[in-house]
Image (cartoon, rainbow, N blue to C red; front, side, top):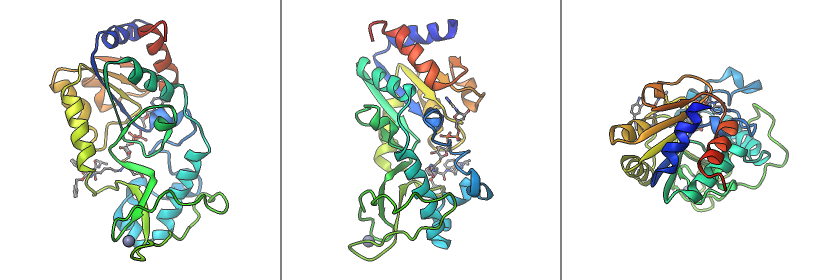
Length: 254
Ligand code: BV8
Ligand code: ZN
C-alpha cells in the first residue's frame, strides 16, 4: 500500500491538518449518500429540487417528511471506523479542523469535538419565519415511511412553520462556518478530502483553496472526482477501510 504510506508520511509531519468530509464517509454507516438519498418512494424526486426553499414553500409536508425520514435513518445507525479514525486524527494532530458538508451527527457521535457544518444539520430545525431554533423535534410517532408527508411543527414564538436546519440550494452558507473553513484551509499543511463528489459550491472550493495555499491534499474516494487533479495522493477505496489503515500507519501506538 505505497500510497497510504505516502499519505501517512505527510500526516505524521503535519502540524495543521484539515479534514473535509462529504456523504461518502457516512455511507458505510448505512446513511444514503446525498445522490442516493432518494431511494424507494423518493426516487421519483431529484435531491436538488427537493433541497430548496421553493420545494418547502410549495409542499412543506413532503419536504419535512423527507428530512424526518433522513433524520430518523441517521438516529438509527452508528458512526463507522472512518468517523472514529477522523476523531483519532483530530486528537493526535496539534491543530486539526474538521469541516463537513454532512447534515448528520455521526462525527459528533464518533467523538469529534467541534465539526464545522458548512450545510447545517438535521438536528437544528428552526422557524422558517422568525428563525427561532426549534430544538430537535420529538421522534415522529412512528418511523416515517419513505415518501410520507409529515406536517412540520409550528413555531412557539410566531406560529410560523418549522423548517430543517440545513442549507438548501440557492441559500447562502452560514458566514461563520464558511469563514472558519476558509481560514483553516488556507493555513493547512495537509487537507484530507474524504467521500465527497466535489460538485457543490462554494464547499467544493475548500480543498482547492488549501492546495493553492500550499497544502498537500490527500483524497479518499472509491470513484474519480474533480478533486483528482488537486490531490497529491489519491487513495481509491472506502473511508471505513482506508482511514483506520492510515491512522495505524501514522500513529502505530494509536
Ligand atoms: C450558494 C444540505 C450562494 C441539504 C446540501 C458557484 C458558486 C456558488 C454557488 C453555486 C456555484 N455554482 C452553482 C451554485 C449553486 C449551488 C451548486 O453548487 N450547485 C451544484 C449542483 C452545481 N450551490 C448552492 O446553491 C449553495 N449556495 O452558493 O449560496 C447563493 C445565494 C443565493 C443565490 C445564489 C447563490 C448551497 C449548496 C448547499 C446545498 N445543500 N446539503 C441536504 O443535505 O438535504 S448539498 C449536498 O450535496 C451535500 O451537503 C454535499 O455538499 C453535496 C454533494 O454531496 P456529497 O457529500 O459530495 O455526496 P454525494 O452523494 O454527492 O457523493 C458521495 C461521494 O462519496 C461520492 O464521490 C462517492 O464516490 C463517495 N463514496 C461513496 N461511498 C464511499 C465514498 N467515499 C468514501 N468511502 C465510501 N465508502
Ligand atoms: Zn417563528
